[in-house]
Image 1 (cartoon, rainbow, N blue to C red):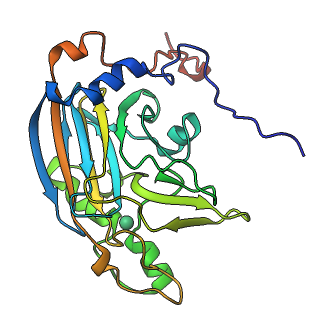
Image 2: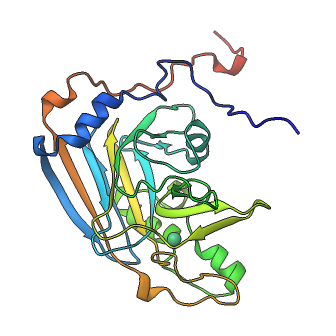
Length: 276
Ligand SMILES: [Zn+2]
């Protein structure tokens, strides 16, 4: 057996190492920001909303424990969207403050940077963490597969309905960040979840590096304290709660040292040689 080795290691000064002073100040100086918009997303539903570059967005457990599935697109170009698996490799299987949500190829730039995470779960005795990138959204096809039932309120479907007003559809929905969701792998490598540790008032906050469209599904499985599949499966409606969303505009002087990131500068064209 050889020793485990973190593979995606960055050189000093890379965009993986965020300016903690800058983002920490943005998070701390809450008196120097203006509320742009806030709304509540009802239980078992979804909603999409734009966030301007330079603004902050919070997802808040307004009534208590509840899991959310988050998707993110470049507002001007939905082909550029959140890339969960690369983000997992660049940062961690579970996200927290100062981690960034990266976009897919051929863009590969930070779309959002996490500025605050009041859950701050860390890593528990089972190796589990919160704000999960190991798994993905629940969907009606896997419900049909495992339970043999038709269910239209899965996170995948909630996201499909949420993005329809933005002329996006099922093919635009992608692998998610499972906000407030605690997961891990068993010793034999099987994906597990635990009941969400989020409590009323807990939030995760993101800084928008580019203009984005965000969408969440308020998971129909609520706080994940009730088994969804298997012999003990039951309806989780009693542990489903709404989530709040707040969009904030920080004072302009707090952003003086910040510039919106450009897409990847790679121009090699994969070695293709075509007509010049
Ligand atoms: Zn779900």
